[in-house]
Image (cartoon, rainbow, N blue to C red; front, top):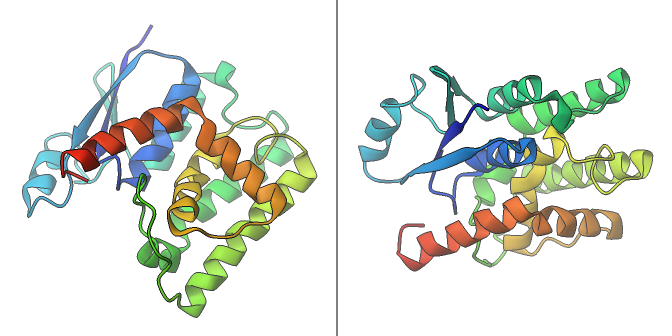
Length: 213
């Protein structure tokens, strides 16, 4: 069986790295994670460029292949491990799940800017811009709609790439104490309780304890 290497940034901060890490854990294949410390005054980019032509993390390596970009990595894993069910089986539902993932991938700039991921800390909510408030409302709208329609524990029934893409938002909402409707709150709690999320939390806490995150 192929063994994967996922190269990530500082785990307490790197939301983009968390997403494919969850997908990789769901596949059940052997893997290792290598961490490059971020915010190291130019050294971080130099270190990343040794692994990624784009100069950004995460990066997935296997069988002489290098894949960069969170969503591309998740798609690659879904293709290589169909039994993991990382996309819904139904074609129509799968199309909507992809739209959810793509919206998260390309959108919500104010949310990212004002509420950066700080996985293990609890921080005061900043004074939010109107666009940030709209970003938060849109996330909640998408969660509530999918959960109501599909009736499972996750956005589209079983765990999928859509959940991977929104997991860092669960972290952000936890860090900054965002109040959620009941269904969304229970969903956030289920995401937070995932073994892979708890593993990420332990690694993030170690970084913080060492002064690296």
